[in-house]
Image (cartoon, rainbow, N blue to C red; front, side, top):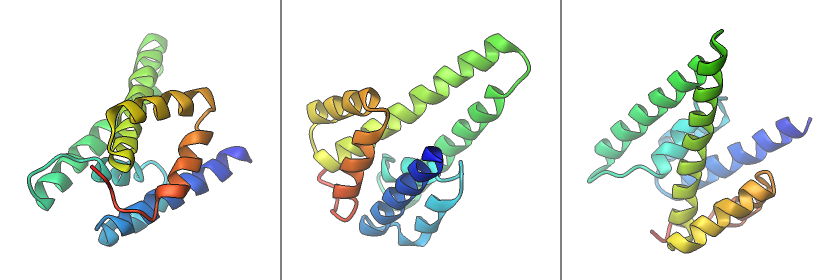
Length: 137
């Protein structure tokens, strides 16, 4: 049950943040399991213009989906390795989102550490507070 509640909060955060920061056309993707990583990567994408940012987000999402699929392979060492890479991928893009909200690298690192310690609870609380505010960075 807590996984479903976590999923609802994360989806709400991605949905509202996408709408607030100019990605209303794809905000609904936040509610689709696994593909909602596109919202996270789009919100944190680097690009000179909108189309470059969207292309980078699609590439990042495809890499994430590939890693996720390989995580469920039958070879144990590959399974563990890709799982760790996938978790690192999510942590990195969560850091980038926290940086966009806070505008400070030091704070974003602290917030990631707090999120890891609290099992994601800090990220959800901080996200719920900041989801309706435009990015600082």
